[in-house]
Image (cartoon, rainbow, N blue to C red):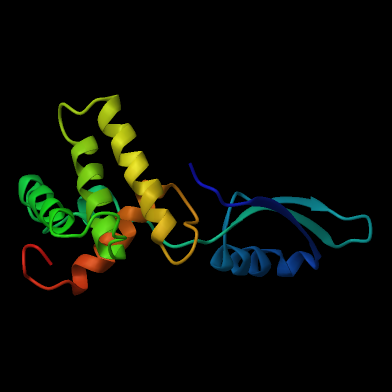
Amino acid sequence: MNRSTVFEIRIICAPTDADRVTHELAAAFRTGEPRTYPARDGRTRVYVTAEVRGPEWPTPEEAYEGAPDIIDALAAVTAIAAGAECFTRLDRAYYLRKAAVLDRIALGDGADWRDDLAAEAAADHFLDVAPAPAPCDPRAYVRQQYARWAATASPDPVR
């Protein structure tokens, strides 16, 4: 579910400016096909449906490229949790890695609705410790953040 806002833009301009204006809008926003009509005064009316450009969301394959296999990833998050004191709030990386491995399990062959529920719950919990609200589907946000984290994480399997 994308949580962005879609809005309609109306531009009244000289007919010779319509292409330039719609091109510039497309650079700033995600836009639909422009609809052009003559204005009463000889100018052109252009209507464009637009959406604020957000970050590009990686596919699961892009986000988890080079990730350890699922068993190793599960072992790593389990080791971190097992080594913590009871009722300790762990760091952001732990919740990210947990949400990512549950997302990978839910995406795998043989996954069912329970796996999806676990992945959704872990992604929602990760959002509770993320620095800002995610502007999209929580699992897409987990994938984006995991890809960024993995690019800078140490090679230690328990990281």
